[in-house]
Each structure stands twice: as structure tokens, then as C-alpha cells.
Amino acid sequence: MTDKSSEEQLLEFLYACPVGLIECDAAGDIGMMNPYAMQHLLPLAGPRDAGNLFAAMERHAPELRSIVAAHVPATGRICDGHRIFVDLGPGRKAGAPKVLACTLVKLGVDRLMVTLTDISQQVVQEERLRQADAWFATLLDGINDYAALTIETDGRIASVDPCFTRQTGHDHAAVIGRDLADILTADTAGGDLRLDEQLEIAGRDGWHLQEGWQTRADGGRYWCQRLVVARSEGDDPAPSGFSVVLRDVPRHETAAADLRRLLTCDHLTGAANRRHFAQTMEREQAHWQELRQSLSLIVLDLDHFKAVNDAHGHPVGDMLLRQVAETCTALLPPRGIFARLGGEEFGALLPRHDHAQAIALAEQMREGIAALEITTPRGPLNATASLGWATLDEAGGSIDALIALADKRLYAAKHAGRNQVYQPEARAA
Image 1 (cartoon, helix red, strand yellow):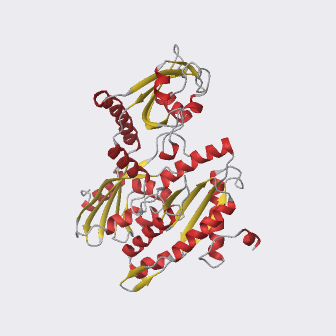
Image 2: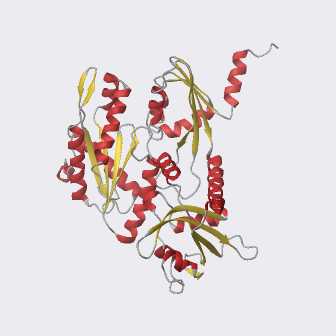
Image 3: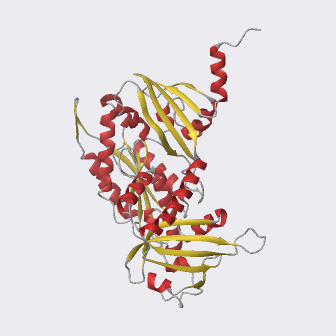
């Protein structure tokens, strides 16, 4: 028996390696991929080309292409541990998201080595440590006020101290028996969890800490840390109730803004990212269920965008994407959110907009995109977009049905000639 060749040993190592390894060229075309990388990449690719790294990641990490393109040296580390949130469906439960860490290394002018590692549990632990650090740091930084109360498992207030009145402006005696969520509303537009979501996490993990804007009875706002701790009786692991501590603390404006921008914005365009967009859709769906106010979704796709990249290069394509995001974001109504959903596809969520208002705004977006002109070495570049829309009412309250209906109408607009908004009268066509 002869010893195994170095090639055989390398193949065995690649097969057994607990880290995803991918070798590809600068355009993203994959030459080699081990089973661990395949396990993560194939589900992400969906119907897209799993043989190309950038195409496979387009829905979840469209920024990878621009990160690679921005690296000028012929060799070297491009990024280290870039985080990709891949558990982004609208049905995602309040819990640990799946997160991949992506490291890109340029081995040559046209050769990249990529590693993918599942760091979901690490991210959970980091968040818990960050929360604990934020809580104890304010012991040194100063606390303006704090209030303590207990609530039942359904959120109703069982007891509360007089400090609650001083901090929030609500009479502590008058709130007994009321739902805490009805009295204290979180800044869900900024990504904060609702009270029921906090209770779910606290019941599972023992506690949950959240920072965000809190509104007082007189309409004023203050920066509040809300700690929810599960209480149990005897050997029963199920919580019998919760203790809640509210602390009025100084806000570190710059750090908080930077962190929120990092977690909610698309790397390339500055629009909201898919993860933040999905979370916002869930919250607005809950508002719709409670209030039955109109909620509309617009989806748009740039026409022939691949031809733009092929003819002018990805830097020009990236410039176009940024200008589209800026143009459409400027048209948003209050509480509206504009996001890059992947590649050249964008979405706008419009609370309190019915179908007529959604169509009108979609037309404004179409006109704004058509008016864009980018100067390139090959001459002026213009672009058009096709747009579809849907309302949560006609989707029966289902986020999945809302997205599917808007997508269906988007492709109907494309098949009808592109550079247009789907119109209701075209439904029978």
C-alpha cells in the first residue's frame, strides 16, 4: 500500500472540514466547493445560479459583489467575518436568526477563496452580553429614574410602584389590571420588539433587555431600558408571571445610530436591508390586524439590469442602484420604508396607503427612475423599471400572499412591455 497522495489528503480535508470553503474567480464563478459550503449555499441560491457565488447570495448578501469589486490590490484579505443574515422569511419567529460569517481572500487577480461559517449561536451570545453590558454600564453612566412592576403572563399589570408615575406620567394606581402594551408602546418603527415578543424571549431564556424610545403620557419621549425577567413557582419551568424594570437612562446617540444603521441598512445603496424590511412587515401586519388600516406593498425591478452591468461594468450598475434608492426613498410618505430586496429588486412598504395611493406612488417612482441619467465613458445611461403592487386586504392578511401577489403583478408589468406600473384593468389580459 502506498501512502495517500497530497491531492487525496487535500480532498479528504476539504470534505471533512467543518467550515465552508469555496474557490471562485473574480466574477463569482465557482470552481471548487466543499460539502459544508454546499449545505449553506444551495438553500440560499433557490432558483438562482448556485454555480456563481454572487448570484447564489444575491437575495441575502447582494453587497458581496461590490465589496469584492472595491478591493483594488491583486491579493489580500477583502473582508473578515462579514455577517450574512439568512433566516429572513416573513414567517420568522422571535428567536435566534441564522447567521453566516463570510471571509473573502483574494489569492490572485482572478482567484478568490471564500469561507462560510455558521455563527448563529455566537451572535445570540454576543447579543446577550451586549444587553448585560448596556445594563451594567448605566450604573456608571447614570440613571435618571427607574420603575418596577410585575405583570401576568398575558401582559396585565399585577403591581407597580409609585416611580412608574414619575417616570411615565401614568397614574400607577390606575394602571393595575391593564395591559402594559396598551400603556407603553415601543418604537417598533426603529426595530424594537413588541411586549408579547419580549415575553416570549424572556420565557424561553429567563430574561430580555431592550433599549428604545419610550413615550410618556404627555407625549414626550425618553430613552428607556426595559428589562423583562421571567418568574416561576416551584418546579414548574413555565413562567407564572414577569417582573419588569423600566430605567430612564442617558442615550449614547452616535453609537446607537451607527449600530442601528449597520443592522438595518443595505451596504451598497443605504436603503433598508431585507432583514429589516421583513421585520417591519411583520410589525405592520400586526398593526393591520389590530386597526385594519390600509397597508400596501410596491415591488420594483430595474429593466434589463444585467445588460447594464455587461455593457458598463458593475461600478456603473452600483451607481445606478444607489441613485434609484435615493430617488424612491425621497418619495416615501411618513412611516414608509424602502428596501433593497436583492440585486436590482426593491420594495416599498406603505402603511395607511390603499391601492389607489400605492398605484399613484408607484407611478411617481417609475417616472423618477426614468428621469435618471448617469454619465459613463460610453455615454449617458438611462434606466427604466417595472412595478407591481398589492394591498394586505386583498391578500387576506397574509404577508406571503402579499409578496406573491405584488411579484405576480410586477412580472405582468414586465410582460406587458416594461417601464410601467401594473394597472388593475390589465388583470384580465
